[in-house]
Amino acid sequence: MKALFTIDVEDYFHTVEGKYVPKRKQWDDLPSRVEKNTSRLLDILDEYNVKATCFVLGYIAKRHPKLVKQISSRGHEIASHGMYHKHVYEMTRQEFDLDARDSKALLEDISGMAVQGYRSPSFSHTKDTPWLMEVLCEKGFKYDSSVFPAARFDGGFKIENLNPHWINTDCGNIFEFPISVTPVLGKNICFFGGGYLRLFPQWLILEMVQNLKKTSQTPLFYIHPREIDPDHPRFKMPPLKYFRSYVNLNTVENKLHAILSRNSFVTCQEYLQEYSKNDVGLSKQPQTMQFFDQYAGGFDSIYGSKQNAFWKFINEHFRKVMLLRFKEVLKACVPDSNKSALDVGCGPGHYMVALAQQGLGHVHGLDFAPSMIEIAKEHTDKAGVSDKCSFEVGDFLGFEEVKTFNYVILMGFMDYMEDPKPIISKALSLASEKAVFSFPKSSGLLAWQRKLRYKFKCPLYLYDEIQVHKLFNNFPGWKYHITDCQRDFFVTMEKS
Image (cartoon, rainbow, N blue to C red; front, side, top):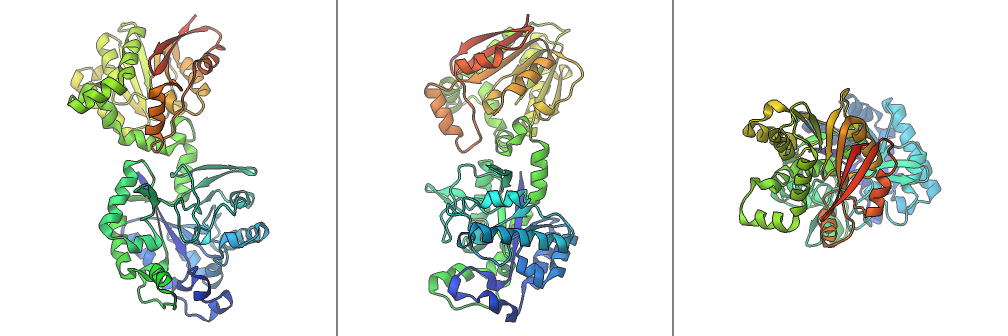
């Protein structure tokens, strides 16, 4: 899983403690430390070959244009942090419009590169700024990173999807990179940037990064150049504000080395490019991709690879439908050494093994999760049918094949597809005899527990019988049959 490392490029006097820090008119008279500190940060990143997204304050760009050019020339991404570090919720929509426009134009003029991203000062996007995303979209920004999905001094913004995702506005779509948080005692807590990175011990931060990965959440780190400069000037503030601004500054650099050495990174722009490139099928949801890639062993256990009492209980009471549809697939595919099957979302390869052992001449497995494919290869080797099986890592809608397969199998695949219609059409274009699908039911106790279980894992889509009939009743040359399979509808499409 790739992480994101971001830097808010501002000076030590750009904290947002109101009356306790210098006003804008005083900034030019203060000694600047941002060039030295940012260069030091970039040197540390170079040690680990990490490229960052740098949200540069417009004031810094005007005062230190060479710094902007240095950041860009060293391969890092330039994004906007606004012009003068003013809370967005303290601006009118018109003021914010000018601030976002001016900062973008300035940074593009200096760097010679398109500026795609924006982050508000102190993550000051709140319920009082509902127009922020729309304005950014109007100004040509492709993504934002202003959402802090937890309570904080400056507000916070509650969202359900904690992973990078698209946001729809009246002016188009914009991509959001929310700040990473993880639940502790029922509350979302950040451990991954700013004062939180300074406050918490290194071992706990690293542990919480692993928690993010276990729940398929993309880790996003953020830092300010002053946080690797413990000797920078400090301002008089009340004890709590002083603590918040200056706690543990001398611990940050060691934590930074630990984080960089234990993770691999992409810039926000690279992440968005990859996300958009794969914006088909399951690949348009990185949360789903990451979940299945990491949960490969759990899916493998469904078919008996783990035989302890716990897994037997889970499989018998909560996964029986998966074994039932397994039998339905084997019944639908007539054994014949001259026939082939495409197993879409093949997972750990148990369908492939059974179909090959049953007598099919060739079974091709397709899955977007590399860990699933690796397990599938192990199973086909162990079963002695690897000569009948082939594998491919990829997304179904992007799958290119000139030949057809006698059977196309999509078990447990529609559960995670927002739009099933192009999937059905693609499957039928590749099937010469039959295509079989499963659709999870939207009613019943098992549907309720699945919704609850998947709430923080990945999106889940459920169906009633009327919806399933509507999906399949308009394909000339095909006839369909729906079988009630406990938690699922099992659908067989057969050439008429």
